[in-house]
Image (tube, rainbow, N blue to C red; front, side):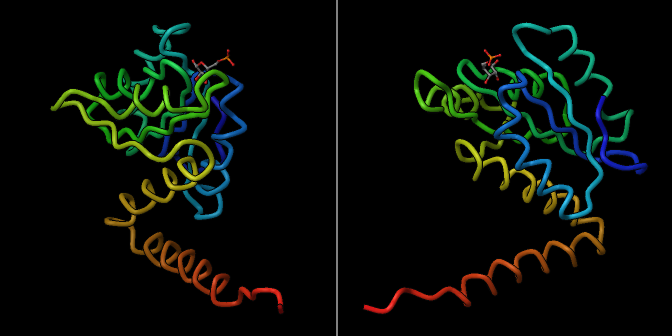
Length: 168
Ligand code: RP5
């Protein structure tokens, strides 16, 4: 299991394949930027189902508070993980080769009532926003993180305010 710091990870970042890392690295980078300890692991709902069950069933006792799950195609990882733990599961649809991630999006978002998988946008935007959503959840009980999250958003605001359009 890859972890980012000596602190106990509070966020688990899982993905169905190494090919998902190009998208999910944006989740990892955003969590790191906000100083949130996380772990990352490849867990495939279809190809390593036993690993998925073990990961989800031990998540809470290992200290995780939120899990971010990214997958593409028939993207069952977020939903199946949500079925195995009551921790919040945030789903990131990875852009697929065949259907550009629309299949991933619909696979994750259309859960039956009772087992939710809050679902982000396809690709990089969703990966970044999953990290920010996890931060917002954790910031409810972490005032230092709340301060860092507000500073992150202030940074975005400053960037847009500094933008300029070319002269005609
Ligand atoms: C899914 O199948 C993974 O989440 C990945 O997005 C997709 C393709 O996997 P690879 O064929 O690249 O391993 O399980």
